[in-house]
Length: 267
Image 1 (cartoon, rainbow, N blue to C red):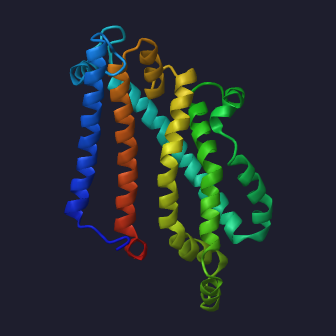
Image 2: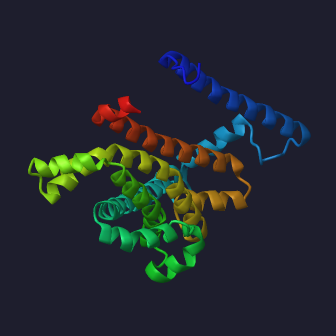
Image 3: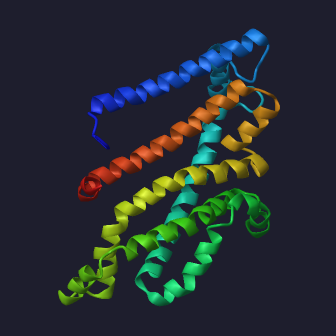
């Protein structure tokens, strides 16, 4: 039977089994590579990875800082601020495009065009506009997610049946009440879905920018350690990025389940 639901226990076991399988596959590949070249550092063993983790969490004698704290703080702040500004702008523009024909005609074409421009290709433009400080990273993330996210909000608004809006007008709702108390409340869980899909691209934009001009952050550290072939440091950083993105996605999913039971059950 297609789409037959699984129990939570079986789903959890399958997920854990997939992770264990990936770890086992990595162990085999690393073992084979070190049989060919015992000094290989491109696919480090678990012991070498442990040394890399200690290097990340211990105080570095050169700058007297813990890399994990320094880089996590910089990357998290940039990512968080970029997402906040991008989401707020996208929600406002999406509501305007979905609720008013004038704004739809004015904004849909440029948003559709800007959504096709890779932010990483416009790095030089961001350098000129806002410099190379933290403002550049925040602007790049916000610009990167705003066009596509605003289109998602716009399409969600357009999916609301016209009959529902007419009923609200009949019951005496004002334009403001219609937008914020009905339309916004109905599309909010869909906005959370759209934001979850933007977490990955936002991290890509940030890491790419940090690799080019960053002096701190995950992207900067990965670039620096890759040049030194310290892959036992690079791989833990990649794992941290994956864990960070998963935690954000999981938090948004739990928020959606807790606040919008009607939407979760419907889907």
